[in-house]
Amino acid sequence: MTLDTLEKLYISELRDLYSAENQLLKALPKMAKGATSPELKEAFETHLKQTKGHVERLEELFEQRGESPKGKTCHAMKGLIEEGSEILKEEGENSVLDAGMIVAAQKVEHYEIASYGSVRTFAHLLGKDEEAELLQSTLDEEAETNETLNRLAETVVNPEAISETESAGAGSNR
Image (cartoon, rainbow, N blue to C red; front, side):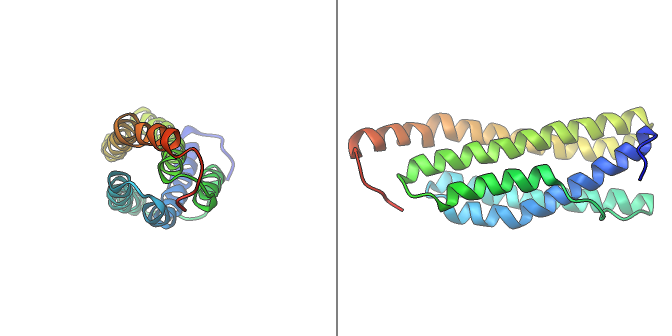
């Protein structure tokens, strides 16, 4: 595809997001399983349900357009997921590893927020207000997930990691 119009760029970016969301559908259960904090586990499980909805919204958008959402691989998400997977393989204090998973998850959320914000703006500029509303719904959920991760990091996981590492000194729980 030659990217010679904003419309073509819009479709290309939507396909990229479709790939990204489908990659997340496979990664989130692993993150939920690897989390030791019940709150973090719940946050990953909640976001998995939302991600299924994000995929459905994108499929609906493409169906309305009479186009396929497939055909592109989101290499950025692939890299972010690989980076996050490294945390799951590490040995260390559970709360510290949970803190690392939050970092990885927030990198993903920030990527998604940037991407959905851009395509939503493209949709508005192209006069596709219904599509923009669908994209805004997903953008709102991505921002909500990011805020949940912030709250968990600040009030639960990071304070526990400080406490755990100060009192333990050495030793691994995983």
